[in-house]
Amino acid sequence: MPRAEFSSYYGRPILKPPVWTWEIAAYLFTGGLAAGSSLLAAGGQLTGRPEVRRAGRVVALAAVTASAALLVKDLGRPERFHHMLRVAKPTSPMSVGTWILGAYGPAAGLAAVAEVAPLLPDRGPLGLARRVLPPVGRAAGLAAAASAPALGTYTAVLLADTAVPSWHEAYPHLPFVFAGSALASGAGVGLLAVPPAQAGPARRMAVLGAGLELFGAHRVETRLGLLGEPYRIGRPGRLLRAGRALTVAGVAGAVLGGRSRVVSALSGVALLAASVATRFGVFQAGVASARDPKYTVLPQRERLDRRRAAEGDR
Image (tube, rainbow, N blue to C red; front, side, top):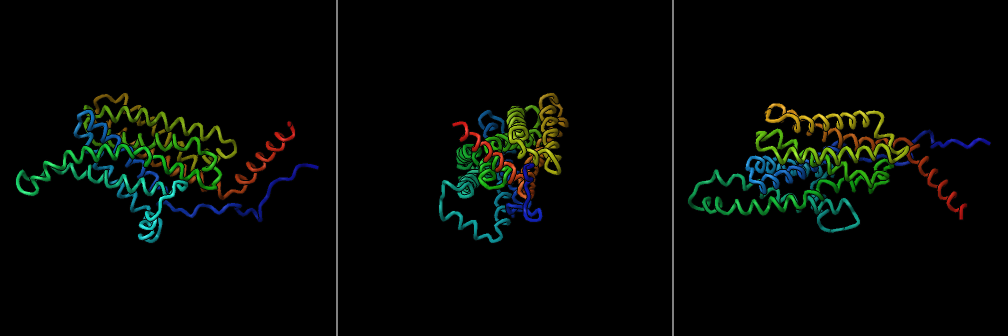
């Protein structure tokens, strides 16, 4: 008899699709942007480039503030975020991520506030703040940069820890995509906000971030078999292809643009847009895989067949 084809009840999804809305997809972007910007600021601080440092710190604070607002909005009730800080559960990526965000946010905030020190008067209490803020900002900036890699990649672990087929199966590769996207978006800030003469750290970050992102994206699309299909077709596929094209264009402009302020700024915009497209593409690919029952049934049958074949060889 011919092998029966899979089916589900009236074609209904077997898994419940994620209830997350666009806020979480945006949160994936802003978290990565905050992480990349803090690393950019640390690079500017350590290499004596004040404009790079300032741009990175200010954007990092704005991005982490937006991340907190998006997360709280998705939770529905602001007090739920406070409740998440009552426990620390190492086996829960959501719990770990909450603590990462809680540790990163104050450090990024202090580093950004320190940038106002030169604007304060020399005398009185504000004069004391003018002297104290710069060293505090230096320490806080390095602390934010130290936690930035975790902030930029924990969301990849969070997605992969779900039952959503195309997220779960991509667990070895999504951290590369998210880390590269975070670095590329931070580089975009530097290319957009500072003169080309000071943008050396941003250009190096762009090359490194693009390499990691493109490597991870290639493995996601080619190593997952059927579960890589949602990353290639439909709206997620179009977003991810646009993200790759913008990443390549942004890096090419950063490397080949030389001292052109216009080319550098356009490259920065391209890298930021690429990060948005990549995060939304990954998010929507997972949702699409949960809605189509074949991405749940067929991989399960393939695993069962392999297990039976392995047992038959013994």
